[in-house]
Amino acid sequence: MRPIKKDRQLWHRLEGYSFHERPLSQSLIDLLEEETGHSIDVCYILIEEYRRFMYLVGSTGETLAPSPIVNLVWRVHASDKKAYFDDFCPRIMGRTIHHPDDLPPFQDDPAYLRTLDYYAEEFGRAGVEFWPDPDLATVRMSRVLFLISGFLAIILSLLFSSLLFAGLGIGLFIATLFLKWKFSSLPLHAETKRDAT
Image (cartoon, rainbow, N blue to C red; front, side, top):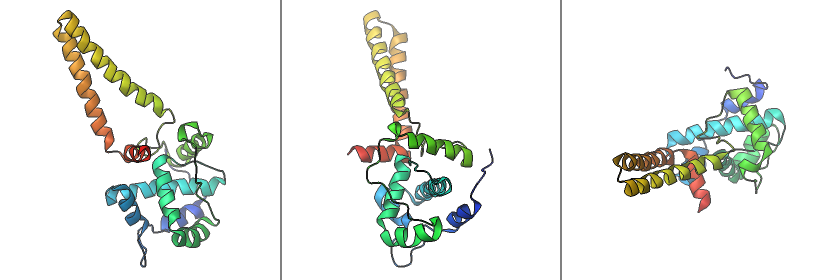
């Protein structure tokens, strides 16, 4: 799907805005790297997602909700009041866009669903590593069910002395650990863990 860009002027201003050049203070890239611990490459990707979100906010004029990781980028950017309120908002966005202090959980926010719809319309389907499915609880529940299935398979193997059940149980445990390891490096997962602490 080819991006549409309904407001080309806004998109060109956003594309031309440098989030990594701040001669007298830390850039947004530096602040993000410090805040999240992610590599510079990942921070650039996060800023691209933030740029897209700000485009959607500016082009629709509606109240939209960011994903948790994009919200973090927005919060860090808005915390640099000079860069955000004195430069970015008036010069690039054409108006002040305030970062809300208390966003509802994205799973319960209809504005998040609108954001995903607009995102898909403008940029194609959003990547789940940055824009999670609002039904994230189902994903978490499936991990729990996966572990319970492995545990039950091992119990059945003990009851029936079956190597088949033992192999299945061990396989499910290994698969669960692998998936947990694989997904723990995603930016969204790291942000979710940080919010929990």
